[in-house]
Length: 415
Image (cartoon, rainbow, N blue to C red):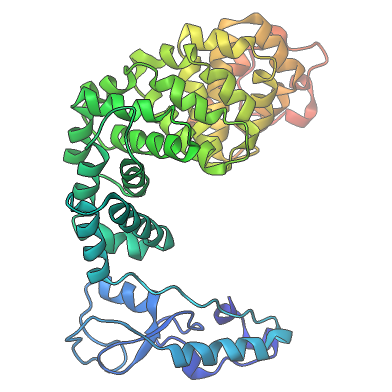
């Protein structure tokens, strides 16, 4: 950002009054507090959030925590950015203002009013949805106004195949918020509510399906009760619905992200992993593995390792032609976590199948594992790599790199 650039490097000095007194960086969203001082919104909000009740510059008490946008200063900063574009300074965007709490309360009341016309209630929810999408700050304002309780009541007000757009809009907003454990229990403890969410996994609209999967993941991850988590993962067709989202044929990044989060959460319930395998989870994971972003790829590999620990999952993984080559390729490529999960899945596969051992060696796993045990990866990853090397000792070719001077310093014990 311009504020972090050294003026000597870019040949331009940022005016002092354009810098935030707290961060000393170029202000992107200048706001004025009750003392008349102007700060960047993010900096002053962080200052107040840490318990400070005084103005950072004047040290006067902040009697009012209202932040007033300084539009004049922001426009001056934008004009300065444009004038200095030749020096590599980028124009700051015009920030969206946080939602007005009174507006949020009005929209929530309108959405909850059963006496209001359906179109009016849906319009209120759509506006709330837009506000929630805009920023974390807006979501905080919405959540602070008892939104989750109102939205939960609307989502489950009509649990049948004819559920209305009102339910779906509420579901879309609710899927953006974390739920408290009592709220998660409210959903999970009622089989009808769980069945309704599962049914929404098969809705004609992909958005409704993804929002339902997102809420299922939030509920499963938000409870400590193993019995209630198992109750959801044991629901009829829940795995089929989630795997269907992963297999959605069109490019839809959110479907992949939500789908893998939901599948991983459900697969943490060990006794029901077989249901994931039967629903085609293994094929979906391997086929889409290269499409995931880093964090989602880690979660997908963790799910693969979980499924490799049960016989049916291990067999399904071994039968897919791309499983072993992809897992070998991933070692030391994406992240330490991804490497650990890939090594763990390969260990399970090679322990159960000689064919998997041959495929792994043919894919170059020996070099990868020897590099892994000498890397800075986690100790768990190194232990898995050492165990896998022992498992593969009968498959090492005679001219193996194991006898090469290049690896004379390897800390892997000779077999």
